[in-house]
Amino acid sequence: MKVESWIFLGGLFFFTPTAIVYGYMTNWEEPVGMLALFMLAAMTLMVGWYLLHTSRRVGPRPEDRVDGEIHENAGAVGLFAPWSWWPLILSTGAAVGFLGLAVGFWVLYIGAGLTVIALVGWVYEFSRGNHAH
Image (cartoon, rainbow, N blue to C red; front, side, top):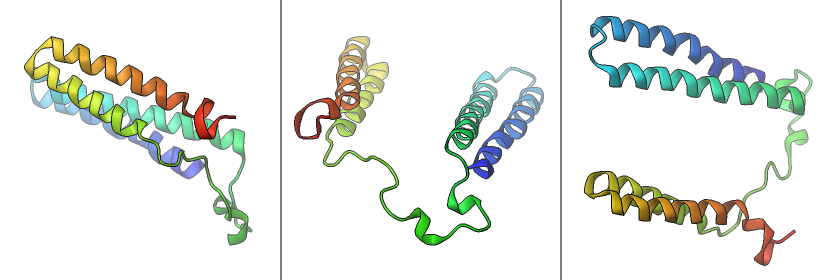
């Protein structure tokens, strides 16, 4: 995971100067592109930091080691929710929320409520029903 983390952390050193050059080239009058590039640098920093700390906690994976064997990575890799409808409801709530920005704020409130309900449902999905712990 260290390779992946350094690739993402390298994005910080690429996108930050790019944002500064972009701001300079536009005479600091076009804030959307510069802000988007700074946010992109922040997102690569977040993903790289998470991967770096996860690699320290988990240790070297078989694909990170020179003596790693294929059979060491066999089996279940993660925990995945089978037949979950919550991602669909969450994306619908987000779409309704963004529609509310164009149509009216009363639609935004409906989308925000649906998004919160779907997010809570997805987080607590394994606490009830067929997959309860």
